[in-house]
Amino acid sequence: MKLSVREARARFAAALAAVEKGERVTITKNGQPVAELGPPSSPVVEQEGFWERNERVRKELGLDKYDGPPLDEKWLEEFNDPAWGRELFGLGDDWHPERGLD
Image (cartoon, rainbow, N blue to C red; front, side, top):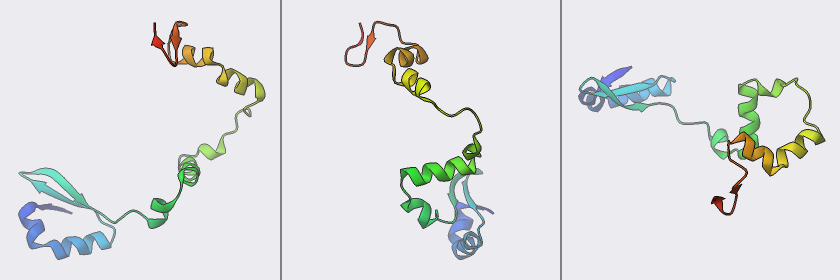
Protein backbone atom coordinates (compact mmCIF):
# COMPACT_ATOMS: atom_id res chain seq x y z
CA MET A 1 0.00 0.00 0.00
CA LYS A 2 1.26 3.50 -0.84
CA LEU A 3 -0.04 6.59 0.89
CA SER A 4 0.92 10.23 0.67
CA VAL A 5 1.67 11.99 3.96
CA ARG A 6 -1.79 13.57 3.86
CA GLU A 7 -3.47 10.20 3.18
CA ALA A 8 -1.40 8.54 5.92
CA ARG A 9 -2.62 11.11 8.46
CA ALA A 10 -6.24 10.65 7.41
CA ARG A 11 -6.09 6.84 7.11
CA PHE A 12 -3.63 5.91 9.85
CA ALA A 13 -5.95 3.25 11.32
CA ALA A 14 -6.33 1.61 7.90
CA ALA A 15 -2.55 1.68 7.41
CA LEU A 16 -2.02 -0.03 10.79
CA ALA A 17 -4.64 -2.63 9.91
CA ALA A 18 -2.74 -3.40 6.70
CA VAL A 19 0.52 -3.70 8.66
CA GLU A 20 -1.14 -6.09 11.13
CA LYS A 21 -1.97 -8.33 8.17
CA GLY A 22 1.72 -8.37 7.20
CA GLU A 23 1.60 -5.74 4.47
CA ARG A 24 4.20 -2.97 4.20
CA VAL A 25 2.91 0.57 3.87
CA THR A 26 5.03 3.12 2.01
CA ILE A 27 4.49 6.79 2.83
CA THR A 28 5.38 9.22 0.07
CA LYS A 29 6.06 12.95 -0.03
CA ASN A 30 5.86 14.65 -3.42
CA GLY A 31 5.66 11.18 -4.99
CA GLN A 32 8.93 9.98 -3.40
CA PRO A 33 9.01 7.27 -0.70
CA VAL A 34 10.07 8.73 2.65
CA ALA A 35 9.03 6.06 5.18
CA GLU A 36 7.74 2.53 5.50
CA LEU A 37 5.52 0.94 8.07
CA GLY A 38 5.84 -2.77 8.62
CA PRO A 39 5.46 -5.49 11.21
CA PRO A 40 8.06 -5.40 14.00
CA SER A 41 10.99 -7.77 14.01
CA SER A 42 10.42 -11.02 15.79
CA PRO A 43 11.25 -10.67 19.50
CA VAL A 44 13.14 -13.97 19.30
CA VAL A 45 15.46 -12.56 16.62
CA GLU A 46 16.08 -9.41 18.68
CA GLN A 47 16.99 -11.45 21.74
CA GLU A 48 19.21 -14.00 20.06
CA GLY A 49 22.94 -13.77 20.59
CA PHE A 50 25.72 -13.53 18.04
CA TRP A 51 26.24 -17.29 17.60
CA GLU A 52 22.52 -18.05 17.38
CA ARG A 53 22.06 -15.31 14.77
CA ASN A 54 25.13 -16.57 12.93
CA GLU A 55 23.73 -20.11 12.81
CA ARG A 56 20.27 -18.88 11.70
CA VAL A 57 21.73 -16.77 8.86
CA ARG A 58 24.01 -19.64 7.76
CA LYS A 59 20.94 -21.88 7.48
CA GLU A 60 18.92 -19.21 5.65
CA LEU A 61 21.73 -18.78 3.10
CA GLY A 62 22.31 -22.51 2.74
CA LEU A 63 25.84 -22.25 4.11
CA ASP A 64 25.19 -24.96 6.69
CA LYS A 65 25.38 -27.49 3.86
CA TYR A 66 29.09 -26.84 3.18
CA ASP A 67 30.53 -30.09 1.84
CA GLY A 68 34.05 -28.90 1.09
CA PRO A 69 37.13 -30.24 2.79
CA PRO A 70 37.23 -29.75 6.55
CA LEU A 71 39.41 -26.99 7.89
CA ASP A 72 42.46 -28.88 9.05
CA GLU A 73 45.45 -27.93 11.18
CA LYS A 74 47.53 -26.92 8.14
CA TRP A 75 44.88 -24.41 7.05
CA LEU A 76 44.59 -23.04 10.59
CA GLU A 77 48.38 -22.68 10.80
CA GLU A 78 48.42 -20.70 7.50
CA PHE A 79 45.45 -18.60 8.60
CA ASN A 80 47.14 -17.62 11.85
CA ASP A 81 50.40 -16.69 10.08
CA PRO A 82 50.66 -12.85 9.90
CA ALA A 83 52.39 -13.11 6.50
CA TRP A 84 49.29 -14.83 5.07
CA GLY A 85 47.07 -11.99 6.30
CA ARG A 86 49.39 -9.36 4.84
CA GLU A 87 49.32 -11.15 1.49
CA LEU A 88 45.53 -11.52 1.60
CA PHE A 89 44.98 -7.81 2.26
CA GLY A 90 47.77 -6.64 -0.06
CA LEU A 91 49.97 -5.24 2.68
CA GLY A 92 53.72 -5.29 2.10
CA ASP A 93 56.28 -6.91 4.34
CA ASP A 94 57.02 -3.51 5.86
CA TRP A 95 53.55 -3.37 7.49
CA HIS A 96 53.34 -4.01 11.22
CA PRO A 97 50.09 -4.09 13.24
CA GLU A 98 51.41 -1.64 15.84
CA ARG A 99 53.35 0.69 13.53
CA GLY A 100 51.26 0.57 10.37
CA LEU A 101 53.18 1.26 7.18
CA ASP A 102 56.76 2.46 7.59
